[in-house]
Image (cartoon, rainbow, N blue to C red; front, side):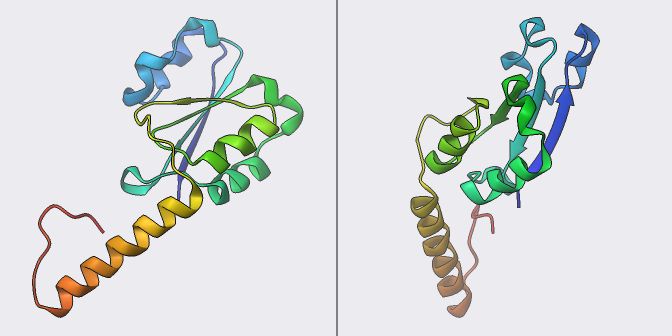
Length: 128
């Protein structure tokens, strides 16, 4: 499940409310915009499913005022934002995921962790 934070930038002091990891991507040129920070759990990829939920929460009549910021986002999610006239900025990852490639990766990761558990082994550094 993605974490969504919506922040209206009315004046310069509102810029102080921007999450730290996005601070270098935001400036006074975004006054009058609504910034939407969308982060997957444990730095996971935000998929189209999560963007659809986001689109249901916002007024699409105001789409030209929205800017979505995220660490990682799937190609399908980017396409949905673009189709709805919403700009987006990626904070971290230049690799473009698809919903399917990310879901397959997650499935293989969970299978690997299940296999380790069956063998009584612990995974070091692998987040679940």
